[in-house]
Image (cartoon, rainbow, N blue to C red):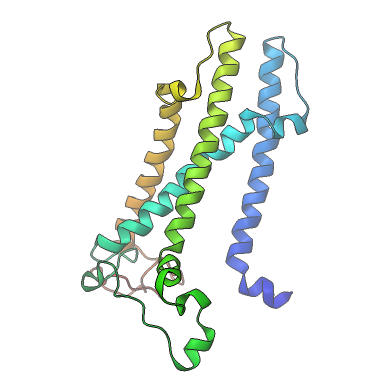
Length: 223
């Protein structure tokens, strides 16, 4: 168990933070919803009912989809685009898709992933599996956000005795796209900031930083 925790410490740390913050968001979101209901002389709901509500689903999926979009765009942009001096960029002579993977030999062949040495379609799919999975998560969470946001919108319409709208009609409304663009712009701003700040700034010991004495124009160098 100690070895497992050590070998997976980074993932376990952020997964734990994710669980804690989801629980925190659920608790405060539940209180906000019920306090708003009391202010309008409406019935409150139980915590477990809130966990399966469109309000909670909207809050979760709205943030998730923007995060996965960030990863997809960053992974793909890093293949072709260059930022001199940034640890988030490949060297200028390494830009573009790498040549077809060469099946490993010797001891490396025994340790290589099965699909990496299978050749053909399986190796092709494995070669793009990171973006494929991240794109799936983005599309799934975007769809979940759109459905839950649509349900919340129609609930509010019904409370105000206004007409409800169909799903595809809702996708054309600014009420859906405003929070979506708000999330997207924050992710892209963070990526741009990280790309340029790693040129000039350092954090000793971090793989996201160049060594302290490394020149600013050294690209793709980490500790």
